[in-house]
Length: 252
Ligand SMILES: C[S@@+](CC[C@H](N)C(=O)[O-])C[C@H]1O[C@@H](n2cnc3c(N)ncnc32)[C@H](O)[C@@H]1O
Image (cartoon, rainbow, N blue to C red; front, top):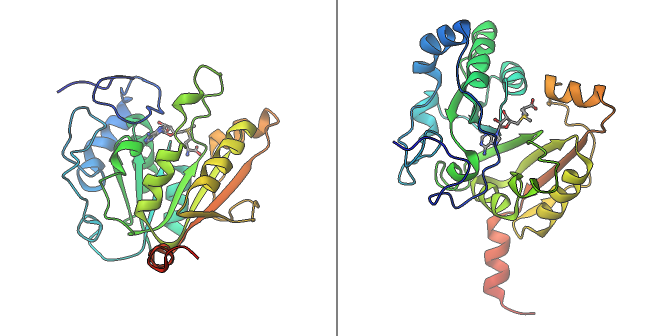
């Protein structure tokens, strides 16, 4: 199997994550060995360790052992947000998509401390995987908190939130479901708003207040310590019927 590469002939979407050692510390390895078989979904791969076979569609009811509204977090990092939210909201299923295995191991450790049963993780490049991993219209809420800012001008093309990613997210969101984002990088916030406003399937809400369900993560705390301003952006998936109705009605 080909290992992950930052670029490669098989990649058709942006690679938004840095190549880092996936080596686990001893405690993380022990947490991984005991908890991953139950809570990390072993998906069939296509070409790399963070790819997913496009023919595979995840059956959320099966992997969670119950049918419940599904919240997806893209880029769970150390798992601070997803675990706190899942603990406070046992009625929903929480799916975390992350590429970085040490972060996932930390998330598993938090899950164990909180005794969580309603969280599952998948080690995938979400930009690619979300195009096929979940059935259309099945996500109740999707979160992208502090995507890597890639602030140097030669790196901005590596940002996760692009027009293509917005389409990918809009596909999985249920009608009227929210996509919540946050960033501490002003210019990325502008890009995010521009991308979301240009999406035919998303409507940006005027509410820019901090999402009450968003836990303060260590990443956010470091940004605040450096004097950064946090920008929250929310978009809502337009009901699918609206577009079909408009198309069927033809030009006014
Ligand atoms: C800056 S960190 C923020 C982590 C967390 N959301 C927080 O607020 O603390 C961004 C995270 O997104 C992950 N990430 C970046 N691109 C990704 C992708 N395409 N798919 C899944 N995870 C990704 C990184 O590995 C990293 O853990």
